[in-house]
Image 1 (cartoon, rainbow, N blue to C red):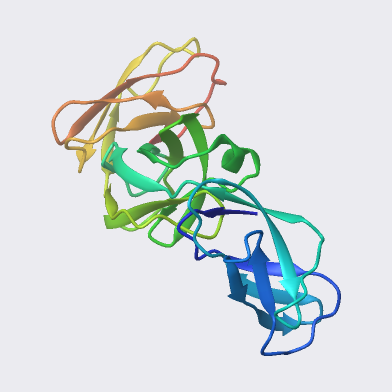
Image 2 (image 1 turned 180 degrees about the vertical axis):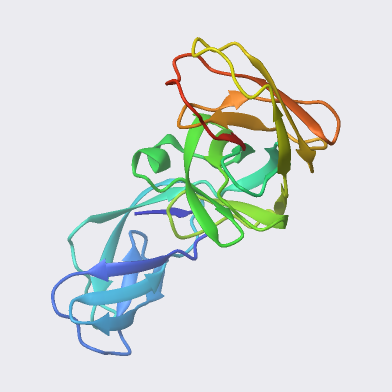
Length: 239
């Protein structure tokens, strides 16, 4: 498991049967980094990771009497604390599907490899993809219109508290022109509606991959139909 150097990660320790006791302890390698443990049940303890001066692996050991500790060498990795600076775009359709680029510090490739790198839009959590040391991308999900907080975790538990915000806006489409085009693609399609404004959007034709849309005022969006789509009617969605 991973946790930020500032500490506070709620860690569940599994092992031989533990008994309820006031002397249960977890030690994170250094004797000065010993914390009280809480008995959860058969073979389970819980303790809060203490803060550390730097990143790296620490051996976690357990004591039943606050004196003698185990020597199992179970590893807990301290990683940098995540701090976000901005998101782009800052707004997107409430239907979701917008690729949101999140900038910040404390992001690690190890977190992505373990499946821990995630974004949270208010209470909705989605997987993130690391594209640079200070940048990840997360796809927004369907959310009612409004402003939400965006935070990131590198261990699936502890989220940043940077206060970065993202706005979900309502986008409505009332007209599509033209209604048809060749299956080879390349048709410039205009979508008329409302709520477009200054926002990054993309078009999706049926089940095909989305294509970039260009916004022309608050009521018009244009995109080029993709090639390779099967003949027949297809839905057109703005994301």
